[in-house]
Length: 110
Image (cartoon, rainbow, N blue to C red; front, side, top):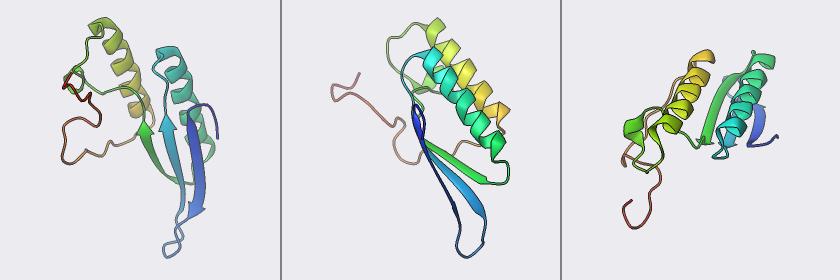
């Protein structure tokens, strides 16, 4: 457990594959998120023998088309670039959300 995540380690009963499952809740601040991304990358590096699943609220999107809020584009691009770099560095694959386009929205539609 650390700032922004909880990790559970185990072994799949029938296949005996060792795995790590990490629930993420990132703060909105880019500096804090960057530290979290580095921590998660190091966790994966230390436990290379595990199959991993990272899920939760990373509080960032992968492209500007995924967010409809009024944040400055420059700020969004820093978040997006850092997050995509984090994903690429770890050779991770994003699983698509089925159903809704957005995972969170305000009740007033904004």
